[in-house]
Structures are given as structure tokens and as C-alpha cells.
Length: 408
Ligand SMILES: Cc1ncc(COP(=O)(O)O)c(C=O)c1O
Image 1 (cartoon, helix red, strand yellow):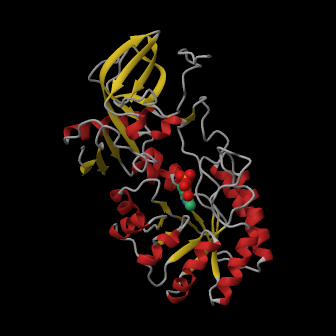
Image 2: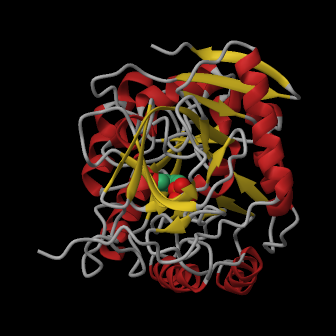
Image 3: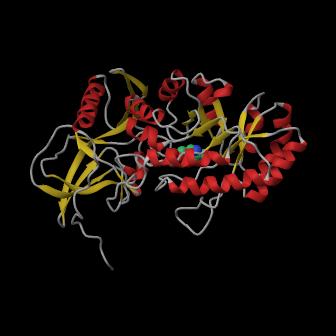
């Protein structure tokens, strides 16, 4: 059977600045002084603020609204920070709904999205909810409530541009086909409700802005067919995170440009004269850079040309995304020595539990702290407690460190 070589294909280039390295090294030292013990996550809103600044500077042709994708990073201090910026949040479950209310969001600043909401939404319904319907089944089950509580209605469309990345020949399970959505519009109108929002979420790590143009073309055709004049266009999330690489070493944002996206939206708005605001729900693009995972090296082995660092945190417990993404791994203390093919493992009994496999300095040793960057998206929601407890969570804002969750 063919074996994967331990030899590198070339060093991965993540493109972080020295200032970013210094920022996280300093932050980790501060967290440790405040009592953080590995494994722990550390989050700081400063990188989110920087990305928001870049997004706010884009001209989308209409006022833009950025909804916090709660599923991506269900972290209360970050939600509270986001709310203090006067920005709204999108949720897809009852737990997320309660989390954003606890974080102080008003009902008007909450967008309810996701599939099969009829399972949980009746228990929390209230007047004026903003709800994006995902299917006719869901609509049928929830229509009486929508009518009684005068919900503000959106429809999620499954455009021709939406496909399952694992099986690209298949559509995803989300949203309505144009025919289904046309039935939904008629049913809603019979109930005295009008659609205000047209929505799609293509997938994550969208390769380039032209994907959005093709999806918008489908949405425009549907709106014309259904004689809809939406007030809001909700273009979902999907922008790639920066500084992350595919397993093959390609930057995941290599073909994506925010400026090209803005141009696509401005050009497409000619089909939507009624639209007042453009909405986005980016998750990973906004929050990935706002956190890191710190782990310690517990043991070192070397065999068949591979150096193996066994750490107290890794893929299985903390960083499932390492299955398909490469992130930078930064030693807290710089180590020298020849670059040696090295694999860093978590502490679980699974060969699968490998955070990285790349060339690292031989000087790395037991007791060293390693910092896994871009841990601010889809790490907390996908952590496991396989054989071990949860990692600690620490929050740093304005240089002040506070504990969020103790290490188990
Ligand atoms: C409806 C919706 N909006 C936004 C997002 C955020 O996606 P991303 O992190 O790719 O921007 C998701 C992710 O699954 C989603 O399902």
C-alpha cells in the first residue's frame, strides 16, 4: 500500500506579520500570568475590529449590515462586544437564541436562520421575530405563529450555485428551490404576510466573488417570477478566513477579494431596486483570527524520520478543522535547530489526533508551549471531551485578561 511520505512539500506560508506573532505571544504570556494552564483558548476582539473596519470601508451600493454568525463562535464576551458595536446576531438554534438574548441583544437585532426551526421556535416565539424560512414543511408548521406574532419574514433560496463540497454534483439540504419558494410566497400572502428578505448561504470558504454573482442572478430571476420586492438581501457568509491553508498548502483566500465581491453586489443591485440594505453573515472570515489555542508539549518521540510531539491538546479535542485546514503553529519561545519533519499530536488514543505535520525546529522540547492560530471560528462549537475534559477559555480585551470557562 502506498504510504504518505514524511518529507515536506515545502514550508507552508501563512502570511502573518511579525506584529501578529508578537501580539499573540504577549497575550499568551499575560494569560499564563493570570493563571491560564494549557490547554486553553484565548480570544481577543481586536482582530475582529480590524476586519470589521475593512468591511465597513467597502461600498456595497447600499448600507451594509453584518450579522454575527453565532454558530461559528458562540462566545458570550465576543457577542457582548459585538452588541456594544450596535451590530446584530444571527442564530440557528434555541441554545444560540438564548445565548444572544443573555448577551443583551434586542429581538430586532436577532435573525433566526437554519433548517427545521419548527422543532424549537414555537417555544420561544414572540412578536416581531425576524425569521428566514428554510422549507415548505417548516413554513406550514410555523405559519400560524408567524401570522399571530407578525414575524418579519425571509426566505432562504437554494440557488443553482449552492452545492455540497463533499459531493459537488449534489445540492445542499438547505433552502427552497425557486418552485418551492414561489409556493411559500403565495401561502404567506394568503396569510397576509409579505417576504422582506431574500437569503442564500452558499457554503463556507467560497473560492471567488463570481459565485455570488451567479447566485444573485438566480435570486433576481426568482424575485421577478414571484413579483417580490425585497427590502433586504441577505447574502449569507462564506468568505474564506485569512492566513489558513488547504492541506495541499494553498491559501484558502487565494482567489477571493472583498473588492470584487463589493463590485458584484453593486452591479447586481440593478435587479433589486427595492432593496434598502445588504446583509452579510460572515463567520470564519471575521472571527477566525480572534483566537488561539495554547497547548504544551508533554512527550517527544522520534521514529522512521519523524519527530513526534505529544501535546495536551490537539485535533480531536480542540481543532477539528485541522482535518482539512493548515494553521500556523507558533512556539511561545523561539527554538532553533535544524528544521525537522515533525508531527504534533493531541493526547487522545487516536492516530487521527494530529494538529500539524510539517518542518519545525529540532529545538522544540518537553514543556514548550505551542500556539495554534486562527482558532476563533469553529473550534469551540466543534470541541470534544474525548477521554479528557474541556480546555479553559480566556478573554482579553483592552489588554485585560479574564477567565470565561475553567479548564476541566
Ligand atoms: C446560514 C449561515 N450563515 C452564515 C454562516 C457562516 O459561514 P462562514 O463561517 O463560512 O462565513 C453559516 C455557516 O454554516 C450559515 O449556515
